[in-house]
Length: 291
Image 1 (cartoon, rainbow, N blue to C red):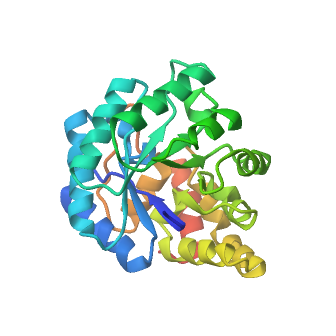
Image 2 (image 1 turned 90 degrees about the vertical axis):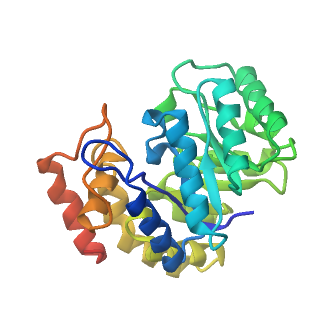
């Protein structure tokens, strides 16, 4: 359903933490104009953990309305409560999102059978295409390839975002999952090779800052143009590294603000990028040519 560079969009906020709808709409236009393949609204990079349910649904609705069919919108609807994940996914469908992205439940550390039953319940409750999201470094929960493979047989579970950074994990997913199941990288540093080895795209933090280059890299990799893809990725590498100098999305929110596209707002318990880290991100942005 989706291919190429998919931005894990930040949620722009004022310094007091209020969501900035004007900046949100400008960011949607920015990605349409930059050739981004799709937008993830209120994924984990969009600070889903600190938005309440009403805000969460409102941001998804605003992105869908501004996109107006020009670019697909994937709504982040994951939660560590199955009932909450179902409610958010229903909201995404109701406001017209094209698909949902559901992170594995965090903190409560479900078993593999619990993960299977959780995602199965959401899929059966809401008839919208759903993409699984496995990021064990943030959730303390690793959904194994065998579990993903079982879920890939459910008709409206259409793909997985894998943020393990392991190309061995990609090989396992390719061999075990349904043949029409989409595989997305969730790790910008290894995304180029992930796509070259058979992945379908990258759900990206870096794309917030350098969307055109990310789309060029992904398009080249999808076309099997290894040298071209690697050359573009080499240009992007300083951003891939610096945007994780502190917990994401702290650096990327600072970078988007530095580009003049968002206020300097983030919600506790996350804090603004510290001055000692700003120089590294600014230098990377200058090297890539986005400022």
